[in-house]
Amino acid sequence: MQNRPVFPCLPAPSLLAGLALTALALAGCPADPPAPEPETACGNSIVDPGEACDDGDANADASDACRLDCTLPVCGDAITDTGAGETCDDGAELLGGDGCSPSCLEEALPGESEPNDTPGTAVAMPPGLQVTGALPQGDSDCFSVLVPEGGWVSAEVEGEAPGSCPNDLVLRLFGPTGGQLATGTPGLAGCSPIDPIVEEGARFAEPGNHVICAEGFFDEPVASYTLTVEVGDDSCALDFPFTSTDDPDGDSLPNVCDVDDDGDGFDDEDDNCPETPNGPEVPPLYVDAEGFLTTWLVAGPFPDLPAGGGGGSCEVSDQDPLGDEATAIPELATPAGDLEWFAYFDSNARFNFLHVMGGPTPREVYAAAWVNSPVAQTTTLAMGIDDGGRAYWNGVEVFEVGSCQGTNIDQFQAPVDMVEGWNRLLIRVRDQGGGWALYARFLDETSTPITGLEVSLTGPESFSPGQQDTDGDGLGDWCDPTPTGE
Image (cartoon, rainbow, N blue to C red; front, side):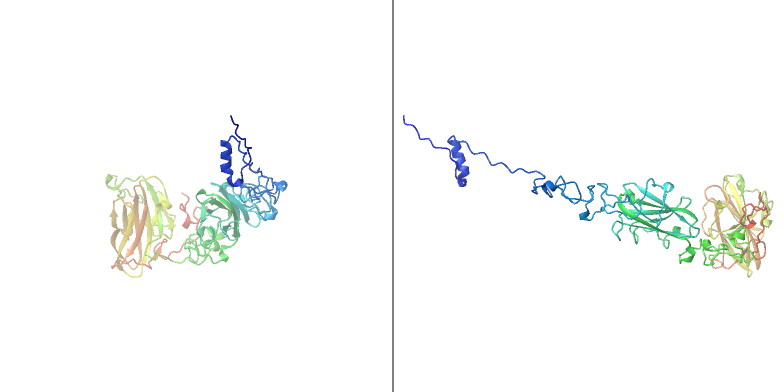
């Protein structure tokens, strides 16, 4: 038998490598193993896939170096990279207020210190009234400043970048007694400002510590903020707006800037009723611009009086606490049954008896005044009464209602003849529960409110109070709810 020739297993040309390997394998020749993949490793000085850098043996967890894990330096890796402009790096917690900003720059301003989450735990603002901070989700930071009487407060925040606003940050201002006075919210001009020109509660301040709290809108986190607060010592020196409530005597000076709040000629420090006119320069009293009486002599409350008719209605009682209410002549600090007459001054058209007296219901009260008419005229007494009521005009009963209702302007009307000169009005009002109040004014024959009527609480003469203090308690009779001390 003839032997077959044996061919050596030679490597095939590269162009026919695939075919050759197959042929050799069929011929019993083993294929050459594939070439090994080049070895990859951080630190081999080759920037391999997935690596950001690789400086070989120079890799290091040190400033400005390619890191040992072949990542580039970055703010937040707890290494201060000066070449990248960093001056600090406090790690992954990129929040301000701890001396290092979220962009790895040292903060020049002092940072806030915990705990300061509520007005009760507020910390004093540092000198210069600027502080940096951050708000993790749900956090609040509160700071206190001392504000003098009549002073003002402004506050605003800024983001880390100059001129930027931190998103979703709210400022709140609280007064010395804890009440919230003003709010600065996102979307307003500036960065959530508390502006005393806009916010009434930030000007004409009560003296004492005020608190400014920063918080995330709906508890959102804020990475960094700078709070700047300014305190002024004299709202009166600036052109701040003010309301009639701030200036009840209408002399264009709000009370905190006015040494004579009520304009009666006595400085507040010498006036035993500093907010009620009872001095030598008190002007005559008049109904207000809409004709409503806003000053009264008052007697009450008279409690536990059964309703008229013996039922449970809102009719005034058949009992007469004054003895003879029709002929009663109200005078300050004189007996009104078992009680005494006292004065009530207000700028509100609605006389809310609950503001000056309390007690259980049912109860009743009298309100009286003298009204001066320049001529004899037929008018209409128009009232809103809560609840039942009865009215006397110059000693004659002219009106009575026994229904229960709230106060509605001009709801009940009665014709009255005004004599030329002084006329006496007395109204009795029952409270069966709920509200307790009175509107009263006069309408002419065309149902137009009569304005310019002079009112007196000192009898048939122009109002002329004095500084008398019957019970000697330091509170003048005209602002004392119990002028005789009883």
